[in-house]
Image 1 (cartoon, rainbow, N blue to C red):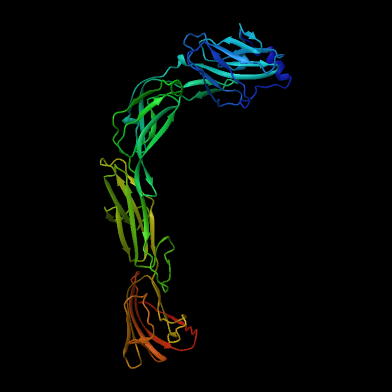
Image 2: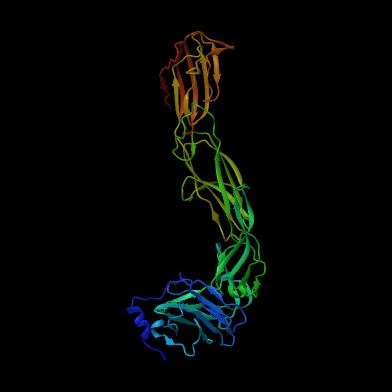
Length: 454
């Protein structure tokens, strides 16, 4: 007989009682079954757990051990409606502090009032939800570049249980899909094969896994209850051809050990002073048949002006401005294009600053070399003369300097002259000339003259 709410539950609530939480070590035991009961933690705090039993005959027995011999123990059964519609369990047998009753063939919950303390569980008859996996295939119509849909053949519906307040909850069967794929290994800087697994609550015709990056079979095994009883089932797909594409990219800029270069005028992580030599590297997964580095002046890549098919590309950037670089890879069908993050290479405007004095002969490590300060200078020639027009030195790169020597010996103090012809990454031409004062004063630090361009 069902009641809107039983008398003893009302009394327990009035006395301050409640359904005790799952943290208490309160359990049920079972008899009349050939396989051990499997206990699963409930997804709600008002249940001590969920028990799954293989109750083929519907005559399984549940037993509860009272907390104290003097306690009066009452047992009720509830269904999807919750304990508000619980009914008394008839035929409960007592043996000392042990109370035993018949479970019956239907899934249901049990509430035990143990001296005013209420305990609750849900019991599932696995015989009503038996897994029967017949096979598994790939559902191509529901698959995409980033995911593969598996279509299971067989029976293995979701198992639902209910809290004491009639809230429906799902009991996962823990059906496991296992397959091979590729993963990027930082230590070897290469893709290596790995095994991936994903767990599903139940069988369906749309069980999604991350798309494999190499050819593989997918094996379904389950469920957790058959696994606990050493009766696990397994089915596998035919070989799945990898369609998904993945890549790993990096960019490394050659760094010049130059003390007179004005650094990183472009403002980004890559670039700065031209010429900037940058190596772009890519590694691709198995299905990446087509691949290329793309360069554009537009961050949206609407005007791709250069494409390079090699995986490792070394490129020299020698023009002012910002260039955007990305890597693209795709499979043989051209259906799963993959794009890297965009690398921004910013080259700053050119500058050329010429000092007008230095003190080489004292060799104190300060201002011993005459050098220009520069950025984004792509061609450079500097000739240095004495007052009679004799060439003292020729510099062919802006990083070079004059040590104040001629034919291995320091020249006398005095005024010398430089003539510079140079070009910047921004197209600016430099035609400069000026004085160089050689002085012997320790730590002499003359001013500088910034060259103008045409």
